[in-house]
Image 1 (cartoon, rainbow, N blue to C red):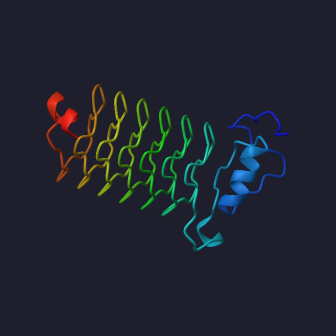
Image 2 (cartoon, rainbow, N blue to C red; image 1 turned 180 degrees about the vertical axis):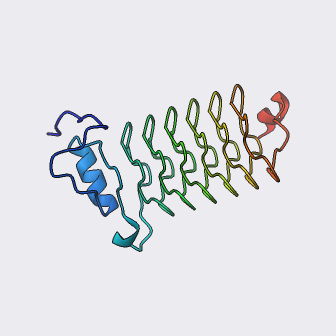
Length: 182
């Protein structure tokens, strides 16, 4: 039986960052939530699969997660401050209330991701695919969205103050009758 989840901001005694997706998931199931500096760049060269993983409230600050597959993963409330998520697949992922401040999401696929109330301040989203993403009330202040695809993204009440929107693709919002037709 899994232990009660430990506080995500308290470093466990004798902490060693996980080096594989399997280690991270096993430790998460065992109740651990602190994964700061997980997956150091020198520790692995392979693509890691966390497809549909449940990592709610996990502390993944400064983790090296470039090119990981997080499609449909539940990262609700996760702490990803300063994480390297370049080229990561986050399509359909649950990232509500996630803290992605200063994260590197350059070229990441966030199509249809749920980022309501997420903190993306100072995040690097250059060339990211945010098509259809739910960004209601998201904080994108000073984020770099140069060349990002925001077609059909939902940005109601999102904060874009100081964000770089150069060459950003902003398609027209779907009308009610277009939604019915698909």
